[in-house]
Length: 225
Image 1 (cartoon, rainbow, N blue to C red):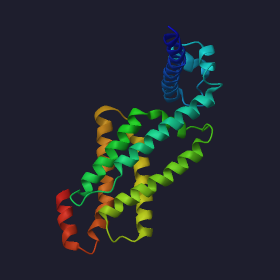
Image 2: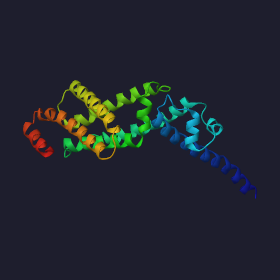
Image 3: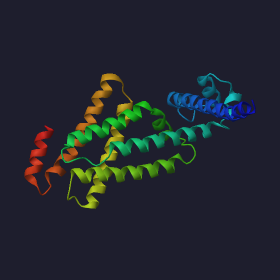
Image 4: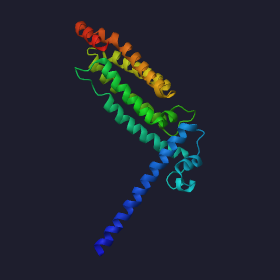
């Protein structure tokens, strides 16, 4: 019996912790929905609690204010985004065409942003909570570095300065296209995704064709068409 009692005492904090984690996840999901619907500035803790189906008092057990909720949500989404770009921007193999590399990277990033529009909502409002701006800038720098790595595998012998410039351009084109993509739904969204892919491929094709191995480049371009 004493062993059973001790075991129960150990299990109770674990169960409370698990319930707490589920409640936090519920509140963050509700906050994401409210931020997307109204924007961060107009959102309120009452609206988030209502969306989560809990009382404001329950919300305040876990978060002191709206900003704390947004910071936690933003941190989690940025962590997921880092994982996504680490997978999507791995160096291409020799058999990977430019079109295939662009398609794969764009699809992964678009899917992430369509599944988690709250990050876009938090970063594009008049008020950005906490240190999300600084964290986003750091993520942006890391993202450029990963794009450089992918481009280096697709455009060998390109000078480092040119790779950096090209990586910044690719990211800028993607961010501009993403805003249009998220503004549409269904087939029209798919059409904008395809337009973005086409823009990136047509931007990068001349750089691929300018490589010293012109014959291999021409063959690679033929595979794209």
